[in-house]
Length: 264
Image (cartoon, rainbow, N blue to C red; front, side, top):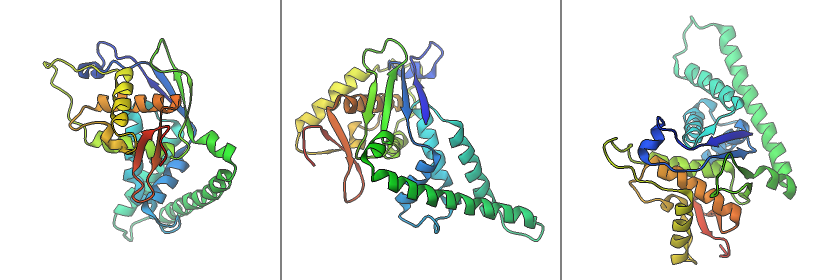
């Protein structure tokens, strides 16, 4: 579980230079580091026992950076897993030599094998749990809770239903990679609020109600990182309100957005 704090910027907050006028909101998700690793393995479309754990380290760290970019306080269990992955990757990149400690090599091999075993067991557990709709829905959601007087964000669960938390985080990660650098301090900041983005998203979807929109197309490029973060909060609020739904298309597994009363 991860608890996040999206807060109002202070006068010394770098976010203020970009005109972020978001509201304080705590976000809780109910998936952990093994869920993230399974998501990355699934994206590679390989068997757990065939994947090189060290090869997905960079992707894992990119997801953690995205979670931090949207002001998520990454739980300690995610950082422990990151340390394990970095250790495995560092040893995989170093050339083997006779000077290497055999016990250390064996220990690292055992570490990777144990991690794969845990992943395989967790995958079986998760697939079994998904057969119980109530269990699946309980994990596949986000909880929004205002930390102060946040009229734009209302307390409640955000049921993702058709996508995982990490599908959503991955889409935000791609957006942030396309963001423009922060504006120079001498330029006037452009302010944006959650309520503004809510109305803009609904207006854009209503223009072609029968046509789904790629999640990445919710923002025009170039744009700022903070504009993307506010868009993320607006999407969560719209899902909570039941006004939009997000899903993965069957072909390329792109994250899509539609008005909630439209069928896929």
